[in-house]
Image (tube, rainbow, N blue to C red; front, side, top):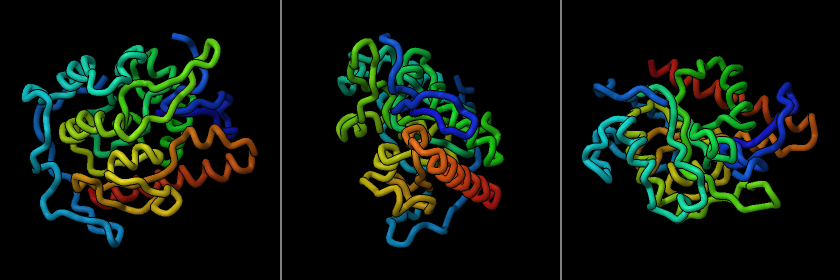
Length: 264
């Protein structure tokens, strides 16, 4: 999910993966009724594959027919053993936000602080994201935030747990939960924060610099916009670089907000 501190007012240390480089050793409203179908975004990037049917009307694989609410999804996710990551993580970290959020943001995975708290984007990268969302004119309370991988993947470094990038198998195994999550929330726009989230949503690897800010079609037909993960900003060393890239990140989020306003 997160990663750490832009030198534009956030005095935090760098983290990776949802909040987790360096650290210790060791939710949402239920959906009661299906909201209106999402807006039909037509300005999709040329060459991307589109599908005529709304992806929310399609059948999606469900591990349990009883998963008809976010609370039921959280309960099922808590018992997940679909990949080995559950063995070393403290707990699963489910998505969080309004049950009918129009905007969903997907990161890579929980970090150290997220793993300990059980909540997404609460570490340094989450602080960067919160500030960027605010500066983009978006109400943070209206955004559903989640991760492509729900368990913290890490490697020991002394007494610290350092983020380790999820592999393709782990991303694919967790997509099961993400598909259900999106089907329940039914966002009108999904923002992929970084390459891992983009791969999960698009079903292919992409170069962020080539597709950044463009409206793409997800593997299930959902509208997706790709931008950087806020942890990237925390890894930049030069103040000028941090400020420039942070401004670009805010601009990306402003463009997403504008798309939603146009679709309203």
